[in-house]
Figure 1: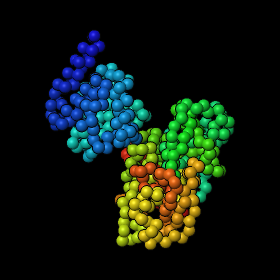
Figure 2 (figure 1 turned 180 degrees about the vertical axis):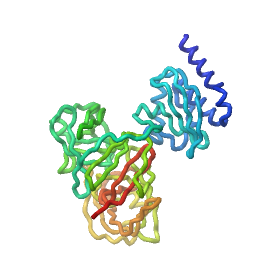
Figure 3 (figure 1 turned 60 degrees about the vertical axis):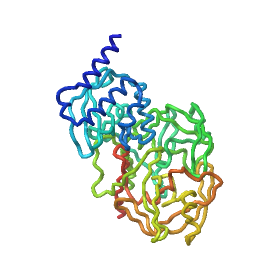
Figure 4 (figure 1 turned 90 degrees about the horizontal axis):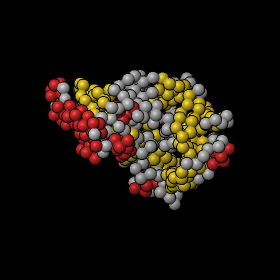
Length: 411
């Protein structure tokens, strides 16, 4: 009973607040009041009108962020938040608060210009992110290059067997083949269904694994187990890395450098391209012109695991009649994605534009034919592959939602 009374007293102190909060706009005070209520009532329902369209928790955005927030409010215990000070910034407001009865004493909350919640420091910190500190260099991971593809060597758990994994930003997690998973002793935690380029398949999943590379450990990893993977590799290392760290790839040095999330300056003269990561994939909005007179808006996955410059999925091809609209087919073949085979037709696109500053004329494009399946996620039109990506060194920063492309020195 004393605990409950104490919570209400602190809640009232936040509502009344120090005298400083009276000088702040009413919209800011109301949003912070509702956040405090949400923690007290352990529900996100009252916060929905107060969340910004691009609200995020760590690297999660969209519905993923809202689901994550709901889980945090339900499970994270604190007594109250009290206002300390607020600063207006370019994107909106940064508010410092004191945390009563939580696992930390102080935190920050970011709001947009309309006083809607952008980021909640307490929530970010549960996923290892602090937006208000400088990013720190954590690890340098060497890699091999095969036709632009990036191969890293790892060990898993207590196994000493070195494994060669494809660094694949088109995959939302880690994957191994079944026979290899059995050999190194991975245990199956549950079964799941996975989307692939030509449809979907059933898989096993192993949880809470530790992945070691070059003195650095990626802990708590879930690993999907497939019956078969591509030849020449032992598995796939997907976006589980970019979801947890700023990830800089340098082809000249053959190194991946990992930084903690925090304040980070992209390389000088880089093309900084905004991205979305709502569904586990990294999505880039672009304009594709198969013919100069017909520019088409499209959304492409940033996919270092795709061996193309650009592959366009079947729904987009059908919608815009790309294969029957005077597209010159230079060659044809097929693509295999985790056991699902799809025909593809190769030719040239007049222009690919990636705002704000990348323009690539006469890009080789692969148009996907009928595969008898769904032929890709409905919200994605295709994949920007490694033959495009390897033209650049690149830095993925999902905290600030961009990829910085730096032209490689080919001398």
